[in-house]
Length: 101
Image 1 (tube, rainbow, N blue to C red):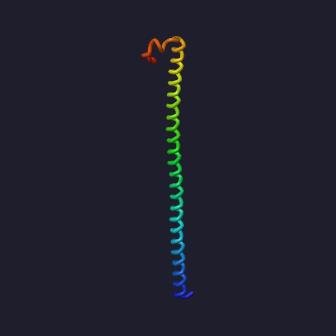
Image 2 (image 1 turned 90 degrees about the vertical axis):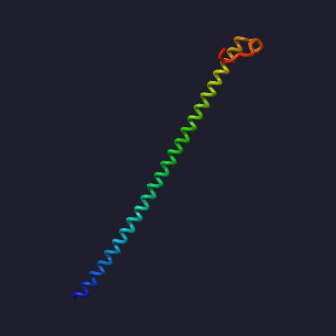
Image 3 (image 1 turned 45 degrees about the horizontal axis):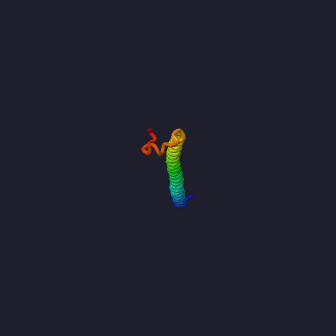
């Protein structure tokens, strides 16, 4: 092999090496982009799940407060019914009655 053929082959090898290196960089950038997109989707899903959990917790707290209020009113109604039963003429005798009497 003469010198010019050797130099030509070496130049071709360098060009192939540069092409493979450029392709490796492009593939690496593409993989990094795909991984970042996957992570972004997972983070968004986690945030949405946290928001959903917070909404459920808020709804449960509101329902608990409503149940407690209904129970309180039911207890007051029962107490008033017992008082009315024990005092049949009560509304006519004492119009200023409160639940604390």
